[in-house]
Length: 506
Image (tube, rainbow, N blue to C red):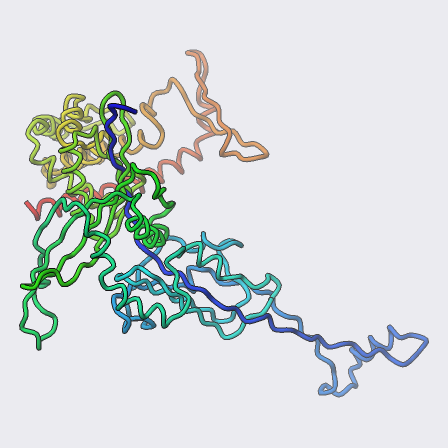
């Protein structure tokens, strides 16, 4: 629409391997036939006697063998995925192995593969051209009652167009595709450059005295161009493998952009190599009435650099806020650390943090669920959104850590109050606000179809006794409290880990 400002959505994905596999035909089984007795009067009896006669020589007795039922093998157990940067690493299980999402989801029959003995599938993904090759080996294949799984469609479902059928052809891509990333990004907009840390500026070959300059860059490009769209299609398999519940974007939609984090190596002669480190897909969409939002989804590698650049883009283009689409634990961890550094330097919220910390240091907070005056003021939430583009949900996550950093951790009473705060906030996130109020109760009601789908909201009058109802749901409440305690323990551990990292870096 005219006058609309659109913001990007960020989605990080990685490429995957796809390989074509030829399957051996099923082995045929022959079963022994029974010889009936020649006694015409009782052939059945003759057969029975022939099979059970105790005087018969055991060596001459017929043995009936029944084939065992094929229980199959889970895809997670027989598939390994490796990232390789040169042809010498292909076929070597010592190469860098990635930990993918549940691979069983790509196969039918509860994620199991049937019909193979000692099946191994090693998928090798090139970080040079992002082509893939699958090495499939097995001792034999046969129908054990569940058929023989056709591996080709399942692997193509994961790996898509990046699959290279022949191993030799795949090995050639390491030389033919050495400049692939460099050519794709040649017309991209460089948003940031920074010198690489560590020993990357030194030559790995002691015989080569030549030194290199290595820097990390973030480059922005439109996805709907042919070359960038092709690159994204090669990266889709990694999205499927590393981001749970992910799906490819529409590369023909002009509102999609891709942010590429690359490593550039150069010498006196110019750039001599470009390596892709990570990427994020961003969708620009309208936010009523005259702004836009930037939504980020997962990625892999150099997430901090990508997040910092996207935060800068959000500020420079005056988007409404930045959100993350179903972040993984790792991405959320990195995102929180990045935002925490920004918030600790944000002066307008410091007094509010101190006020909540003082509240926790004084007296004992009630153990029963209650609405604590611990949330940030509405003005602070708005200031953070407007100035830092951090959305409210993310700010509340960081708010808990900001309070923790302000407390005396040796004060047991203070820390107990803090845990009560985290417990109440966790309970409210799961069950809704003011769960401790007795005005309403949510009661599950079993049924013949699915008891989890049925409930009633009970609003008692003043003269109604709740003892009977409470007794009926007591078991569920005990279970919920145990689950709540586990969640609080995990959240406290997460808060302390992030706080420790923040403290070490400041």
